[in-house]
Amino acid sequence: MPWSWPASSCSRRGCCARPGSPPSPWPCGSGSVGLSTASRRAPRPSAGGSWRTSVAIVASPPTGRSMMPSVGCCTRSCWCLTSGGSIRTASTTPRSFRSWTPSTFKTNHLIDGETHVPETMESVQKVGFELLHRWFGDDCFAIFELFTHLVVGWPVYLFLNVTGGRRLKGQELEKPLPMKLGIVDHFRPSSPLFPESWQIRIALSTLGVVLTLLGIAAATRAFGWSALLVHYWMPYLWVNFWLVLYTWLQHTDPNIPHYGDDDWTWVKGALCTIDRPYGFFDWMHHHIGSTHVAHHLFSTLPCYRAEEATRHLKAYLEPRGLYNYDATPWPLAAWRVAKTCHFVEDVKGTQYYKSFGSKSKKH
Image (cartoon, rainbow, N blue to C red; front, top):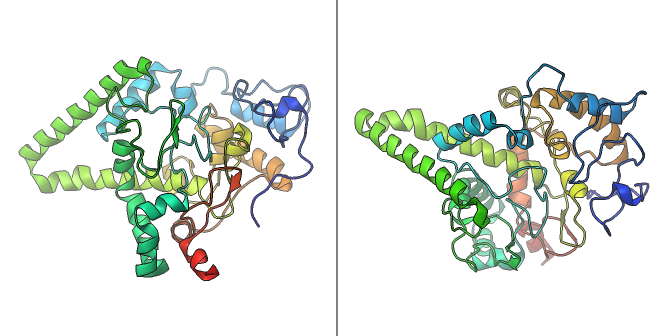
């Protein structure tokens, strides 16, 4: 059944993300962990045991121990910005995104989402995807979807903002290739993706990427193409594979809603995240895929507390039908998403993914 808000959700205004938003599922009252954009830092727990106390404990780093920060913490740490930025630059990834932090990320927003924003039937018809599906069928088109997402999707997103949002600087953009304001990329300081105050920051980011490419060219000349293929380009593709796979599967499923302007709130968007098991890679990647609901609700949560926080969140959210977990092994989950999540019918209200296959059966 499609995911929906329970009728018992609290209706008091203090819980909601903004005036006029739908009722929130979170409990009101003193001592609760605030989930609005302005108050998501967990307070120290008060006396008494509750889900709020438990989450506050695991969300707050112990005194004297440095935080292993998530995205939100890194924005306030020079060390994280320097080390994390250097690592990203080494993988030719821009250091500065417009808003890739869960604290401001409009998760599952049909207009202002950052990435993996669903296409409409009209936009996929423009690029011939419906025709491709008709020619090659479900399975071949699913393979095409996997290739375009996991192999070329990341570079195309960086250079053209494909799968990005539909609105920039107050103007709605066409999809799937937003060109109304010019090329929307992550490298030029003048790109419409960034505010003018970011120009120096973006210039330095792009300079780092250019220096990385020059270093790769020098290494290729010194060691040969085969050495660089094995030691750089194959790991580069592997990193891109996992980056896109995680962001794709964390927010995409036929039963997970996406919201237009009138229906979206920060809490509803954050709760439309899906935790999935990734086997051995859970340990390798610090459980980012299996604790992602907690990551979106508490963006400053130390990653070494994410598993514990998820246990408490699950205990509270699951009985209320608000915790999304899919035990399907990730290769099968990716295959299912590639076969069933192709477009939405509109960008207003609450929308669920549809597939070309289901559309064909109806006709």
